[in-house]
Image (cartoon, rainbow, N blue to C red; front, side, top):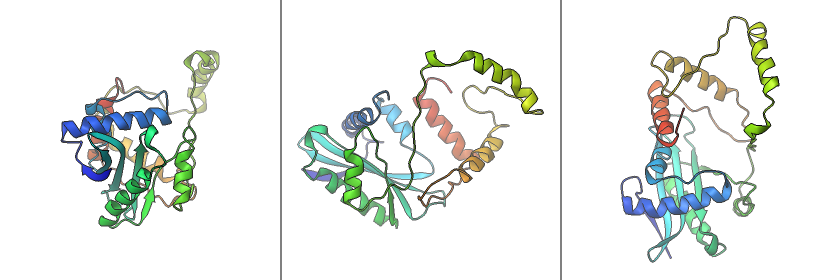
Length: 230
């Protein structure tokens, strides 16, 4: 087994190996999440405001682990690196995760970053246990709520919809399909910045990312590349 840096965003052969293992990891964490194609994965993991390194553990022609280290390049969170790693289910508890953590730590250190932020899911408790072994702390807890469309109380929705104009005079609801129009984009950037600025971050020392019209346009283009409808 050896650790190497890969370039799956430009090398199709490496992309096939990385995306297969990445899909296995994501669907283990979130069983309802769809598997992505190479093009969808590339669109979802590239950003004008982030610099991303991909490292992998290889044994022969097989990848048995993969990790990403991403740093912000927008001027915010200059001490932070975001990491995510997956190890093949049949190869865990062999030190592969430790080797990948060392490689991502080196990548973050090379870019002058001193804080690693990753995520763990209740669906795979070993992730949090692994982080705790190396001194990781749960600094921000997020919860995902899922709603079956068949369970929606449409009568309640109807009541709320009719009550809206009386409760919020001067406001209107509009629908935007696909890319936001150029007239709307600047106000959407302002709204997103305000929403993130007062978002609770618990004990995580996270600065509000710096959004621009160009950056939001690029994020929307990536979203449209991996979604059927926006």
